[in-house]
Amino acid sequence: MPKNRILTGHRPTGPRHIGHLVGTLETWAALQSTHECFFLVADLHVLTTDYAHTQCIQDNIHNMLADWLAAGIDPQRATIVLQSAIPEHAQLSLLLGMLVTVARLERVPTYKEQVKELNLQPSLGLLTYPVLQAADILVYKANTVPVGDDQLPHIELARETAHRFNQTYGPVFPEPEALLSKAARLPGVDNRTMHTSYGNAIYIRDTPEETTHKVMNMYTDPTRIHSNDPGHVEGNPVFIYHDVFNPNLEEVDEFKLRYRSGRIGDVEIKKRLAEVLNVYLAPLRERREKIITQPRMLMEILHSGTEQARLISRQTIEEVQVYMGLLQKQSSTEYGSIVP
Ligand code: TRP
Image: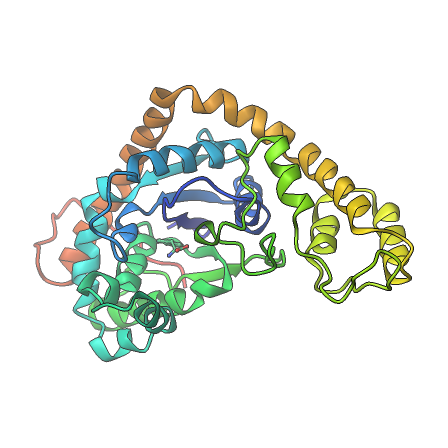
């Protein structure tokens, strides 16, 4: 069994923003040279909060994939998988669901938050969201799952479930470990969490003009009324962005010094930020533009990755069924034992 297998994914909720880029996509792209990577388009998970409005899913998948590739996800080196096209995800989720109590799932913090936010009766699908996520990971016997810290409760559940399965039926699954992104979470232009539904995100696909417009309207230090008032740098999103995107460290230090002592206006700092951000994003945007005009190529990449993944998922399900006593072992089949 490979010790270096990664599985991670996103729900296809639309184009990716720069928070996705520096928080996750850059990490994923780098992992491709050290790990065997599976990147999952988790379209089934989208349905857990809204099963009725499915007309934009295809478009969202398309846009998300274009951004993934623009950010350096390379189908030659990684396997891109469409969750709903692989029945073994659902099948394993059902089987693992037998090993998890309802009470345990009701305690998952992301579930509790969603229930509060949604203001409606949670569906069975929402409750079992983390079981499906555990199946996503375990169906490929992935050991490592790069995620943001909001996903930690789900990885914990996947570990517990793998452990329980192994204890009950035999050593089939590795207990997967989360790999937390080192990059700090990028705030939105209004200083809340960057989120598509908040309208505070800068997208990879935005034009330079749109980007500049968003930057010029960014939230800065609310205590600073005049440009000669001393300003706050810490926690100021304009400076957080400069730290991430401006390669000229001396310039950033100088900006901070002048800002703190009230010797530079917000406008100047924002103008420079818009420039560096547009330079940073230019090569991605160029790649994206080429990719987005080739929808057939995108679908082929997704199709062939999914086909490859399916060879593995089928094998895992067969093994699971044998271990669970649902299927008689074919005398010729050898299952790779897990490396602890
Ligand atoms: N729940 C993840 C998110 O919202 C998406 C996801 C689905 C995922 N299946 C996964 C992440 C498996 C890692 C591993 O971001």
